Amino acid sequence: MNNETSPDTTLAEKIDNAVESLEQEMIDFAQGLFRIPTQVPPGNNYRECTQYIGSFMEKIGMKVQYAEVPEHLLGKLVPDGEGLPRISVIGTLKGKEQRPNIHFTGHYDVVPEGTGWSRDPYGAELDNGKIYARGSSDQKSGIVSQIFACYALIKAGIKLNGTYIASATPDEEIGGFGGVGFLVEQGLITKENTDYCVVTECLDADKICIGHRGTMWFEIELLGKQCHGAMPALGISAIGHLKLLLKAIDEKILSMPEFARTTELPIQPPACRKMTLATTYIHSGDKVNTVPGNCKVGFDWRLTPEYSAKWAKNLILSLCDELKAANEGFDYKFREILSATPTLVKDNSRAVKAFQDAGRTVLGKEMEFSLSPGFTDQRFIVNDGGVEQCIIYGPGLLEQAHKADEYVTVDDMKASAKIMALAAVTLLGSA
Image (cartoon, rainbow, N blue to C red):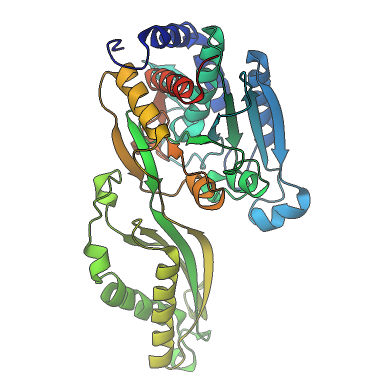
């Protein structure tokens, strides 16, 4: 730790010592959290997970509340959630005053473990300073760091003037509508009641993320006429329509100059500084001697912040209409799965500067800026909640997200907790 830089070195030393003294507790809490399999879909063990987090928050002195999506809204907000509960847990450490406040938020849902693991994906094995588990990096480690940042302030005896809030939410991996989206909709995170917000995603512990690309997930169902494979002229092959569609996308969309343009924004990794449109699944047919009457194809369109999801949707719909007009028998249905608006905040806000200063002190170097290649819960907070001072910062390596043998380092969680605690004092003041 470089103690020759601002903020105040005595304060930084107190936080550093407190976090280091809590290392074993941090490891124990993290392992317990990582061992709860909270895969989405469908959304397993959410109640158990939030109770585990909430109990620890109460133990260290935070006031805890739970925000659960009412049963009658589950079908609307989480149509693929099988009616399972959607719960957020919010811990608050009130300072001398209610305001200003800072709200740290991270998601506890994880993608399914998948294949290729050499370890138990929910064993949370500690090996050479790394904890291996699904969701360890993306992004339960962010929840660990934001809670232990608060714990370190308490242990160090640092009294805040403002209020420290930490929440753990569900469903980010499927859009976030039952998690942060619900909290914003319910008025729990808005510009009227939130001064600063930090989404604790795994965008690397030495980077401050100020936004993310936009996303358009959609499915096109191509409609034909089923018939016997020995008499294909009596039907209309939906797979033939698929060939027309994919060829048209290659020639008329992927060849557009917009796809060749590299944004100047620091999206990580650099390969993601261009728009991408990926074909992600194809479902058609069920018998070798039957020409299929329908074919479903899925797409994942990622947009740099210069382009909107609405722009992308209009392009693909126009293309499909052109194909329908030019090819007899061509028909389709379009289904929007998810639309996420690109998000970008200022890189010179008070929140950004506080984290830059804290990072310089803890890491001994300047922190870089980044933008996420995928959408995050930041979009709800900024675009819907109107909170302008909302950044993304947390432990864990972006490159570990969704991979087999995913891990997070204990050192990253500790460094992030120190930076969060130090930045919180800068923004909230000490009493």
